[in-house]
Image (cartoon, rainbow, N blue to C red; front, side, top):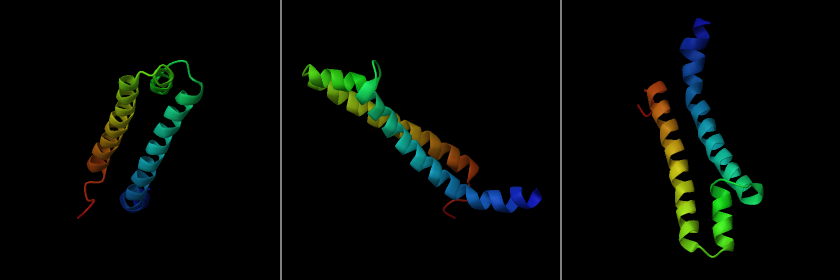
Length: 90
């Protein structure tokens, strides 16, 4: 157990966080795409409904919100990574 916690886990944390970042980006894109296709609420529905009614500012706001939420999710994951993997980049 000591070998795992002091050698294996710290050595694998960089790859784990890389996988988490990729998974976060893909899952956020899939959630928005699913809302665009078949939801009755959410950002994707708001964008598709506004596009059908030619409310272009609402479409831009929805797209900007998707980007801001994705950025915030990425920043939170980066914050956790810097706390747990403090030796990264040294």
